[in-house]
Length: 278
Image (cartoon, rainbow, N blue to C red; front, side, top):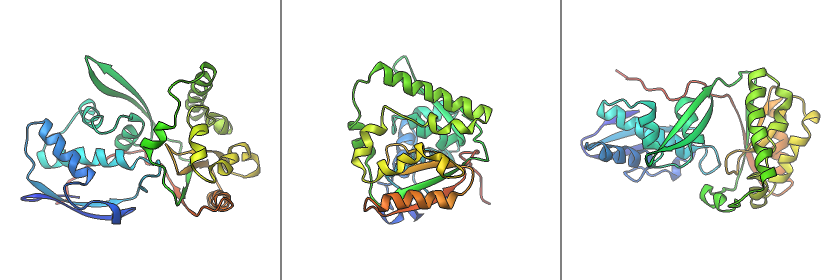
C-alpha cells in the first residue's frame, strides 16, 4: 500500500525477512522510486509504504526484482504516470541486469525473457505463457544463504560448445513439454551443465537433493528438481504428494547437517496488480 507523505519515506514491513529490511530511504523499493523520479525530472516528496513480503531474501527467489518492480509501481502511484512495458523494463534494468526475474515479477506466469540492445540502450523482450495449473511448486529453503553476486563469480567465463548445445536443447524442451503437457520429460529438461555443477559445491546438501531429479520414478507426483536461481533454495515441480516431496528434500539436507523449511506454492499467472483503495 502506498500513502503520500509530506517528507521522506517510511516503510511498514512485515513477512519474510521483515526484521532485516530498512524502514527508511535506504529500502530498495524507496531507492528505485526516488531514482525513477529523478530520471523523469520530477520530485517525490515522500510516502508511507506498507509492505508484506512473501519472498524469502537471498535465496534465489527473485526478491530483489520484485522490490524493483514495486519501486517503479510506487513511482507510478505517486506521480500518476503509467509506463509502457518497454519503459518499465528500461528503468528496471538500471537496477537489475537479468530479465529472467524482472519479467515474471511484472507479468506473472512463465516468462521467456530476452535482453536486447539498440543504439546503446538495453531493453527486455518478453513472452508470457500461462503456467499449467496442475503443476505445483515445492520449495526447500536451507538455513544458509548464497549471495547472487558471489555465485555469478563462480561461473566460468567460457563454456564448451557441447555444454552450450546441451542446455539450449533442454531450454527448448521445457517450452515444448509445457505446451504439449508432456510432463514426463520435466526431469530431462531440468538437467544443466552451465551453472548447477559450479554452484552446488558451495551449498552443503544440495547435491543430495538434486539427485531426486534422477529418482522421480521413486516419488509419485515428482516431475523434477533444480536449484532456484543462484540458490540456496531448491525447487521441485510436482503434481501430487507435495508434503512428502518437501519432507524428502528436507531430510536429504538434514543428512548433510543443514536445517531447512519447505513451502508449497502455486504459480501466480496474473503478475503485478495496481488498484486504488478508496
